[in-house]
Length: 496
Image (cartoon, one colour):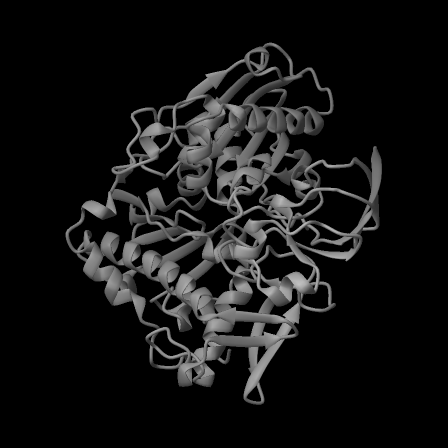
């Protein structure tokens, strides 16, 4: 029997089979599943406005009695038993598609560059002769339904090949759309982290499931459209560029090419503030890279009120009259907080004295109330503290290996969407970035830009040599990590 389900504020009306699970439907309409639908987090919360969704044991563990009483449920365990009206969040695809103008190559025809991010996908078709962008497509990585972070997907992939099929189908569909049926598509260049590389290429992720997280299958992989089931010209070549080691993939290789740090005269760094926290430090003489388990705090996936930068997310927090002034995306009531807002909130709380340098809330408080119903817990702030310490420690270690300090870096490039939107002053205030703010430069989607450079000029990444450093094997890493845990006591000179 079919029943009506209405999703607000989206204005979507659906007809679903009674008794069916809501998980697949909700994902397509903006609900996130950070733990892969295992009921271990609160990221997939929905609110029942009318009708009824049965409360499961998993919901009772994750939600408070008051939340359940006011209609909140876990989307991953929700089933349709009758007509429903549900309040859900809306995805807003704010993906950096990279508008940098690149010089063309020596070939005629078209090519496609694809950045396979853990959360988002972006594809661009280019004229190989002129470098002109012919079309752009963005979308969510369909693997998100099985976990927000790479380790959740690694665990899922140990028992199923579904993630490989999902990503191939999704990227193939985007490639066909962005090329608009052109018969002169010659090459497709893909980049992504090591897990994305392995899952797309059909390579076992088992070596990445446990210490020392070392895979022997880091090489570039090549396919034909027929092998992938893609609707592209048969003469087209699909290449997924090589990885660098551990969880440092071809997205960072492409980022090196895009920022040209392999040609820098002075010590330079590239930091991708994602779940893995990939870092590169070096110059034209030597490059070293590492990944550090920052966790998904910067993407707010592990935060109790966390969400992506969508309608209702607190994206900025400043001090005002001894309290907090919050900017909410869309201008409506706050539903949660995204990564940039989280960093701002911690920075502002430090300046107000409500958050102490050791990471504890002042006066024994257990929560930090921002605005509306959005409240950060002590655990949320601890997650951010651990994430920023992991990045700061990794950067310190790589600099020390060059006989330098973080403050000696000539330039620091922040890659990706979060690096583009986080306020540098706030990142410095919490100790995430320990250098002069003038030396920090948001670099946008360097993964996609480097992918396009490789597409237009095949040698763009060919000569880049990078040494991968396993931070866990560095004797001083644990002590450095502990030293980076505290928030700076001295207030920054820039007004938060």
